[in-house]
Image (tube, rainbow, N blue to C red; front, side, top):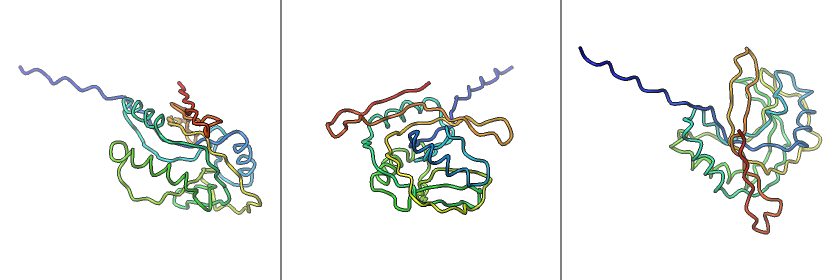
Length: 196
């Protein structure tokens, strides 16, 4: 009689992404804009701009990702949300910038270079920064009279927890966040925040 092989333990994983988080003023402006867009609206607490979606990652990967955030050069920059758009294949309405500022483009490329190939595949995809306003939506028929000006100053590692309820919104949890100090021009180190 031969011994049965010992089954390997399945490694715990978390569904992760890296994102820029808007402040409360921007959230309120986005919420007002959402009123005129049909579909399943993104809850206020879920509004964000994704820099990279990592999918399911082993829990052991989190320390490396938080270390990346802590050592990333990240200074506040201005982002003008001045156009709406629509991804027809997934029926998603969004708002984003007409012009991608150099600081955002650089941060995205720095993030991408760190993640490949350990965390994500090297897919040649066009970076289209946006904030999802609604799903199961249609092409937004609205005109933005004045752009929403966002002073970007929050960069976070996020966990997405899927909702078992049909049509339910996922829950987003901040695992680690970096916030530049208010006097960053005086070379004060960024502030790091960890959330449970």
